[in-house]
Image (tube, rainbow, N blue to C red; front, side, top):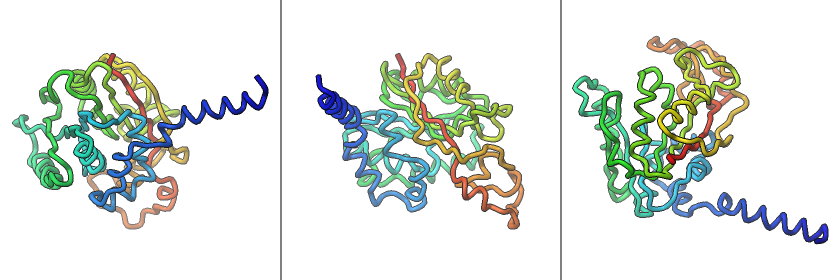
Length: 277
């Protein structure tokens, strides 16, 4: 085979390899570009890379997708309309109403979330699952195709429920199902005790997932930020979007110089894909 033929063959092979990334799911593109998304969420796309991240995790039409602790609904605004458009199901794992010790604040947050995403014409029929330190299953065993969690691992470590969470994820996923994780990354420096500054070592996440039975399938640098020095006075929360300027629980410091932290942007994050064998 001539050198020219080799070059053409290699180029063709590369085109085939990159085609899925270049020709993204049209329904996903539509959901990300849709008018249902809030301005504050759209403004964060440059740091959160929704299309690339969901594609890496293996999002596909017709799936049952479970998201844990969805917060303000950054991913909900994308995944719920996507599920509606493709015949799938979006499940939000939210505050555990079966827990008699749940706080009034947590109850209100869940009620507000359900009200915010109650428009079935836009978001379809969202399913809800109780999720917490003492909650039951997230759904029928082997019923989900994809479980995702974004920037929650450090919270579960603080609550002493990381192992329980991973076991819940493993139980609800089908064989071959995927657990997608995005988390503030401590590496290459050591993880602080209990990840108290919000940064978690990649190996901590891998070990917890493997303990539950998962296998690490792939990692991506799509959400990496090499500018993040990870030595901020108020932990990861010094950075956008939280922008903390004083210790937790104290009033904001109006004199705090945010210039350095705005230049860094959002945190350096690991993005991992685990598979249930």
